[in-house]
Amino acid sequence: MRAHLGDRLVVESPATGVVRRDGEIVGLHHDDGTPPYDVRWSDTDDITLVFPGPDAHIQHLDAEHGQADTADVPAPPAATGPVSEEPNPGDIGRRVAVERRRQGLSREETARRARISPRYLAYLEEQSADPSTATLLALAAALGTTVTALRGAGVDLPPGQGHALLRPQLRDLGPEECRRLLSTHGVGRIAVTASGGHPAVVPVNYEVVDDEIVFRTKSGSVPAAAAAGTEVAFEVDHVDEALSRGWSVLAVGPASVVTEPGTVRELTRRAHTEPWAGGTRDVWVAIRPTRVTGKRITPADR
Image (cartoon, rainbow, N blue to C red; front, side):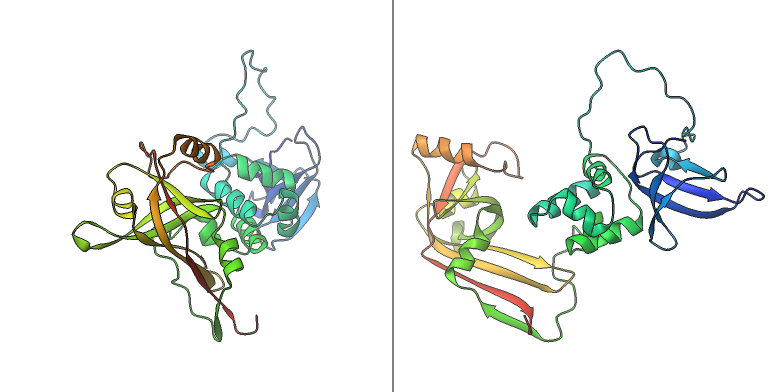
């Protein structure tokens, strides 16, 4: 019997073949996939060390797609050509990894909180896995988020649809905390006056470099045309749907197009990400804030 992380251990009645118990394999003790296994049981959410008996078999991750269970079939000869080991993460794994890194958590600490093997967490983040609901619940609790968020449901809905706190507290943020929340990069919104005097708000991928907010856009775009030489407003925020709390920071100041070639090269070199909108976006706009304010909403006792 050989298994991989994420496979399912199924225990059936020898007489009737009815499934008596099943669970997700979240920990291996041998590199070759032989028993014993750490199994998170679907009926109790408990994790136990299991030495499978004759009434148990392995259901691989791809078994639900119609492929046969090959847990006890000898592996084919190794391929003679190079084997690609490039990660192929699924959307859930990507979201877990992003949220873990955003909170500054290591894989080991996240796995400990979720009571799963660090190797399984690595597998989940790097491969297109299909974790059980119990594992998703444990990971969501460990990361302070929701299963819905990890699955990506509601990505087309605006944030903030949860219930308001019973006794919320809205407090002003000081300049230093505002600047800490604003840095160092992410997605924010720039508010400008477009052609015809109409207001426009555009989301942009931004960086903070030497106390300036900078972003890339394309020539002739609304941010490039309207922002240059004028005062603009720039806003960034974060909403915690599960706990109905969050913060927002607003920066106001003059904007200008960066034209000095050396500065452009340095901004491009230091950029964390490419603009999500894609295409040729080689015009850098810099905002030097003259006023930065912010607010945070929390429970009244925080």
